[in-house]
Amino acid sequence: MYYSFSRLVGSLLEKFEKLAGRMVFNQVVQDVNFTASAHDWNVTFHANGVNDQAVFSSPKDANLMYVRLMENIRRQIGSVIGDDILEMLIRESVARMPMPYRAVIKEHILTSRE
Image 1 (cartoon, rainbow, N blue to C red):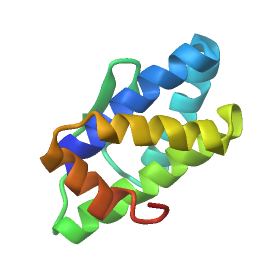
Image 2: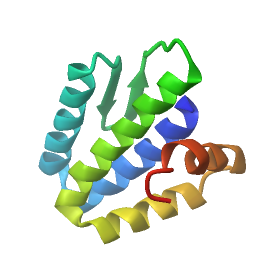
Image 3: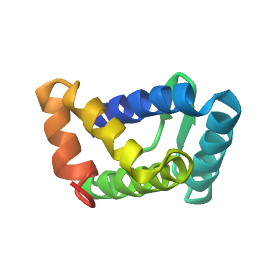
């Protein structure tokens, strides 16, 4: 799940930065990092991707964190560029992933909308 999540978020953040600019990008990343910190998730986001040092007692706990982080990222980015553009970027990012990563993303992380 980590590799699939980090590939998706890395791609999404890269595209978002190009669309919104560095200042808006930095604010969104800061907000997402604050949310992760508030939940004691040892995950940080930055311009070069994701640094995930979280340790989980089960795959279910890991999945819950990734789904909640993805929901937060969607909310933050969607409020800036709009949900339709955001979903297009997510679909494009997922489509470009190798099949094993894509399967994990679709089955576990994007289950709330896809």
